[in-house]
Length: 150
Image (cartoon, rainbow, N blue to C red; front, side, top):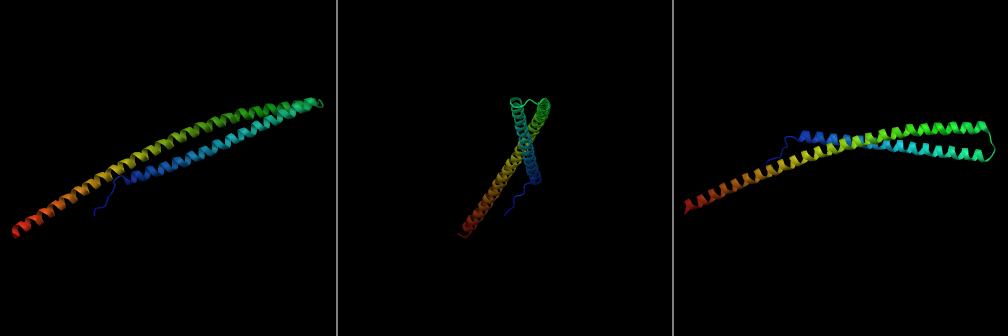
């Protein structure tokens, strides 16, 4: 029996490896985005805690130095939040780019798999055609030898 040999198998394997790399890259970018979002949530909690502490200070004893320090902390927290928002946006853009590359890699792999399937179908059709020719030849031979014997 003939053996199917796909001539572009190495390209298909390369596409599979590229797809796997893009999936890993996407997962890494997703992890980075999650980490940046967690940092943002922590900064927002910190800002809220500073605001609560400032309210509590204003309601109890009035210590101007502590209130000023609290305001500086609040300003610093807002600046950190602005910087973190930029980091989150960058991480989101990187994730989108990684997702796009992963999708393209998956499509390319699927295309090569379809090409491989079509090549295999052609191979099977050729094999069946050869088998039919052999059967026809054998039948003709058997029929021809029986006619000669009679």
